[in-house]
Length: 174
Ligand SMILES: Nc1ncnc2c1ncn2[C@@H]1O[C@H](COP(=O)(O)OP(=O)(O)O)[C@@H](O)[C@H]1O
Ligand SMILES: [Mg+2]
Image (cartoon, rainbow, N blue to C red; front, side, top):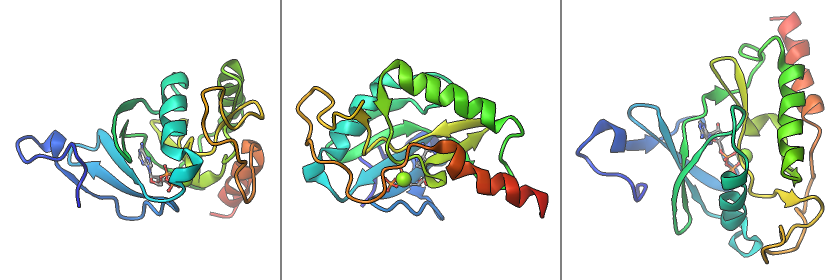
């Protein structure tokens, strides 16, 4: 299995599995030039997770989000968004950036609902939020476009400060 965008003619179109990208619902692939990531969604199709990610991928734009480049069936193609956030790469002004992120989400009435550290990347010192599979329009899981209306089963998390604070504390003892 390889992403539908894979072909051998250009490095930009050669994808390999991402080592260490432990997605819970997906398999992740990165291209040789580290500019694009392909995500194969393998669970929760009845919860409209792919459609939800496409919907929010088109609405959430700006420095703190990755661009959705294309989609085919259960595959999504995103711009590469950097490395997973960690105590080593947490930007010093991360709280300011979190405020910007929450403001950007608020502008489009987006509740991300899965704001865990595992859904935050860092690229050139900028925090980037990914994984909109459980996002809702305010409290409306249908997003007003007829998506599956059931809420995420376990742990709705919209407090990004709490999710990242442990990394800030960990910086002190590195
Ligand atoms: N656009 C991207 N750029 C770089 N890494 C990514 C990107 N999208 C996903 N990843 C990596 O893959 C992991 C799983 O992706 P994610 O979209 O969160 O899938 P899941 O829905 O399975 O949790 C992330 O934690 C991250 O390490
Ligand atoms: Mg995730």
